[in-house]
Length: 343
Image 1 (cartoon, rainbow, N blue to C red):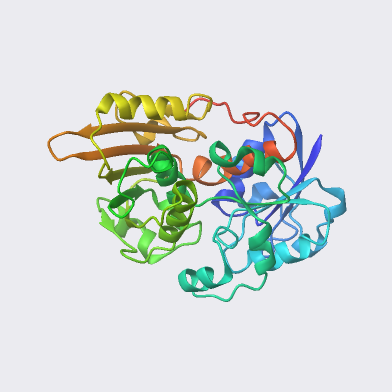
Image 2 (image 1 turned 135 degrees about the vertical axis):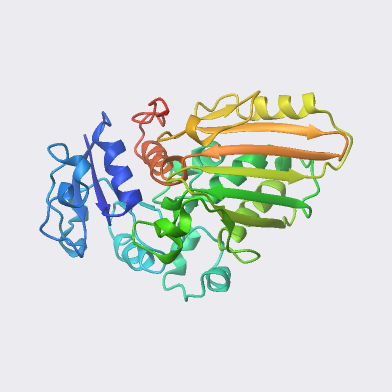
């Protein structure tokens, strides 16, 4: 059994990691850390795990990397980089769920996160963790930067189109709607129930930090400088992201050709379901699936692609476990082939 540590397991992504790993056949959760809840049981913080996962929480400094095969960092950006800096001196494999190692340089990071990066060497070593695009690199990685939730849905919706140079890469619109768990476990005014219930609004227009993550990854796939207009919206639901993408084709194309492209591009990927119908967030709830529906409007000459993911699973912890499987030489689908929860 591979021994796994989780640093920062009291938030949503940390609890999802525990939920998924608990039933994993080839790993054991050996340590869970929390600075603010040291000494308590994990189930004291997340009571749904009572009599299931009652591991005592320890401080991160008490974690012994030599006793572990891999560690997940479920920490905020700006905090995670310091832990990675220390852990990279050991032989442990690392999956970071923050944004600290997803971008191309410390300069780009500072521009978008408004913080100095204290471990730029890690940026050079990190592999961006979308298994359907970077499987072989992830298998050999020591540090994987787990993608953001919005970028996961947007990048996979656009990857076939930009890789085949089928669209104008300067006229892409990405419109995403997310549940409130994307804002994290700590109470905020924006996620306060009276402000969310029966409400719907955009936020982070023009400068959301996931914009550059999407652009850089699509640029790497297309070999052209991709620019997108990205706008997220907050839905009055707990989890799920629905993304709508709009793009202009470079040449004449049909809906049949687009459907064939997507079906062929993702033919060997169990977690990507190319649909004939439109995706819904309830159809992927609590799973690592991403549902994608491409379409073409001949009247307006626009390609449309719709994707749905669970922001806590495919958009965070589930994708992290898929990356873990690859890094540890385990079948990448192990522990993740559960059916969606509906209703």
